[in-house]
Image (cartoon, rainbow, N blue to C red; front, side, top):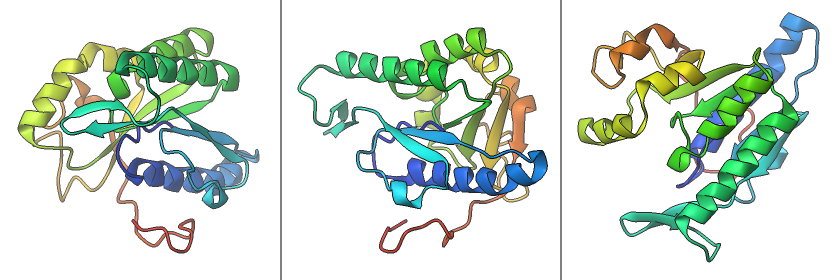
Length: 207
């Protein structure tokens, strides 16, 4: 499970909830244990709240300084830290050889850091399934237009098998709202809402 996590822990929490769901349900369906990694940029993520068999890979953190993004702690340029993050992601994918990859929100990751790793995984582990996870309401029209300019639809179709939307199309459907380009509509699978107060939330951790 990948999340760029440049601000806060919301993306990490969403992926952690999915990890718990798969860890509890897949062994019932397959008769096999599940193991996995949460790859994110939040140092000190709450590993005690992960399901058994899961661990965290922490990427060098990035965040906003005013209106611009930059490294949170490393005293190097943004290109250098993004390149480092990209190499960590690529090495993790190729060493771990996952059956399933779930990417939270940004299809190519922070600054495009996922693309090289996902292409390498496609070549080395062609059976791996790659999923983009989206909340049902994404952003303002202007922000989305800028994001899709940086994220070619053809590249998303090359790298992803499905798009999971956490919501209910009867409440809000991003396929009809214009938030998702039409060539990606056939990849969408609605998954329902992720609830608050989940059993994996450790005491004292705010939503």
